Image 1 (cartoon, helix red, strand yellow):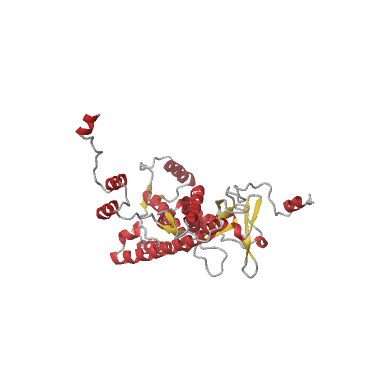
Image 2 (cartoon, rainbow, N blue to C red; image 1 turned 60 degrees about the vertical axis):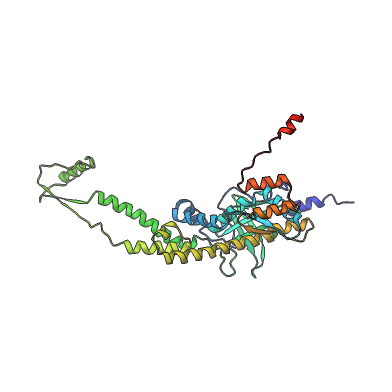
Length: 388
C-alpha cells in the first residue's frame, strides 16, 4: 500500500514543486538586484549593473558588443550528421520550437556584457525547453574545494535553487578557477568612466568659454549696496546684451587660451578602449594604417572563432546530446556556423543524370530554370489538334 504522506513529504522537503508546470521551469524572468548571504554562494562581480548601464548608454561599448555578437552567432547555423538522420530531425525540431537561433544571440550578448549567461533546461524527466535567466539574479554555489553544488537565483523576496544539471552556464574568458566569467566591458570599465567624465568636463569648459569671466572694478570707497545693486543689474541682462553704465566702474575680461594640450591624453584613453574591447570598430579602422588594420582584423577573427567554438561545443554537449540520448540514439548532430552551401549544378552533369534515368524530365526543366535558363511549356502540335 502506498504511503499517503510520501507525496507531502516530498513537497515540503523541496523534492517536488507543485507550482511549477513542466513546460514553464522554475527560473524567474523579472529583473531585480537580489543580494545573497555569503553562505548561499559565491558573490558575483559587483559591477554587473554598471556593465549593463554602459552597454545601454555608451555608443562605443554597445557597438563593440553588438559587432562581436553579430560576427559570432549572427551568421546563423545548421546541423549535420553522418549516419542517423533521425537524430538531426529531433534536434532541428527542438531548435525550431525553442527558437534556438535567437536564443544563442541573446546568450552571446549576456555572456559578453555580464561575463556569464545562464540558461535553464526546462523539463522534469527530459529536456522540453530552454529559458535564458537574468544574469544579475544568479549566483554560483560551490564547496571549499571548488566543486559545483548548484545555482541560486533571487528576484525580490523569491529565491530558487537549481541543481548543476538544470543550468547551462556560459562563461566568457573566466580567470583561473573563478566561478564566474569576465565581462568584455571589465578591462575598459575605468577608462570608459574617465572618458565620460572628460566629456562632462568639456561641456562645462565650453559653457565657460562661451561666457568669459569679467572682473568689474569699482572706485575706492564704493559701498556694498552699490556693488550688490550692480550685480543684480547684470543678472537681469539678456545673455546677448552688454551692460552700458555711467558710474565710475571699469572692467577686465579674463581671457583663457582654449587650445589646451589634451590631444595626446585623449588619444591614449581612446587607444586603451580600443585595445581593451578587442574589436576593430570603424573609428579605429578609419585612422589605422593598412598593416595595423590587417593585424587587428586577423586577431579579431581568431577571437570570434574562439567564441564560436566554445558555444558550439557547449550546445552540442548540453542540448543536442541529451535530446538524442533520450530518444535512444547514439550519434550527436554537429552544429556548424553559417548557411548550408548548396552544391553548384553543372549542365553537363545534369544532362548526364537525365540520360541515365536519375533525373525526370520535369526535374530537368526545373533545375535548368533554377540555373537561369528560360523555358516555355511545349505547344500542342497541329496534328494533335486536328485529331481532336
